Image 1 (tube, protein in one colour):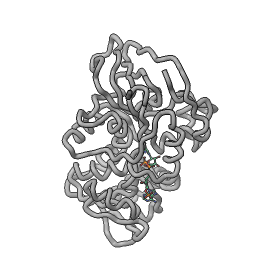
Image 2: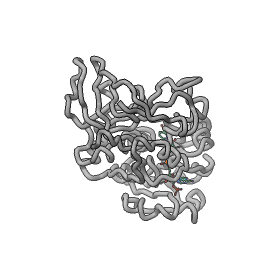
Image 3: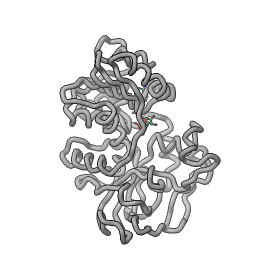
Image 4: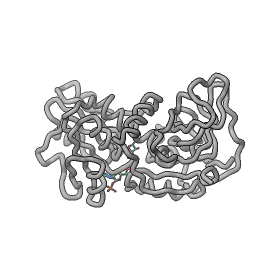
Length: 327
Ligand SMILES: NC(=O)c1ccc[n+]([C@@H]2O[C@H](COP(=O)([O-])OP(=O)(O)OC[C@H]3O[C@@H](n4cnc5c(N)ncnc54)[C@H](OP(=O)(O)O)[C@@H]3O)[C@@H](O)[C@H]2O)c1
């Protein structure tokens, strides 16, 4: 099969399209014919192996898993004898970052609990744009942020891969949503259901006097003290992404701030799991969440997709089509 392979950390130039063995499913695995995948900001970190600390998970000197890629959608081609949930022909999607990676290929074999049936109303390309980004948004808002209907929720970085889901999921969970993005994305985030839009090139939401019950920082940077000021007295701040300084402040200072007052602040790492994929499938099939796709690249041009993601200005998601399988 064709696969994207990287044997050293580096720029997108280290990605090579190669012919490799098609994987055989173990007893508890399914073999998936991949139709589409997505490149995320997280994939770019894994490709570079920077910050260095990430290599404790991905391999200290060189990548442990040489076929990268985590978000994918495809069709089950074969199932191991202990597989109970899936059968050949099922259309599935998943985040393979805890299942050996390997989404940038024509086939992958993964444990069945890494995947779920894909939303029936999505194409493979749309479904591949969901699994990690939407789960980050969901876990940030629901698990860490304890979002409640009627709350005032602000999403910083609302136009990116994670933020575009966060706006829609917060609306689906009954919040009044303020989306923060730049001028060119204001119409897009409004179309996703945002009740209020703040253009960060015109206005600093941490200084306009408004207060929020929950702030999800999907991208950008503000000092944690500014986020604290923008919270209601019992408010919660969750940083799922953004600049390194933003993530570090949330992780290191957030717990102390939470102990010394009524505001809760902290960071979050996504935990991929099947239940959340099923939950999202229902929201998507109910029409409450729709993937926003900025660009499509064929597998053979994946380095270009990484370069584009590396610029940090994607409007929604960047999808990879596995052209050989789509024909
Ligand atoms: N915690 C976790 O487990 C986890 C999991 C996945 C991802 N992440 C992290 O989450 C972050 C976001 O991921 P993503 O996929 O959403 O990234 P992305 O799609 O690459 O984000 C790009 C978007 O961010 C917007 N943006 C850039 N600078 C901004 C600023 N200063 N203020 C507001 N918006 C800004 C851009 O809009 P403009 O160009 O218009 O500014 C663009 O639409 C990344 O840092 C990623 O590493 C964390």
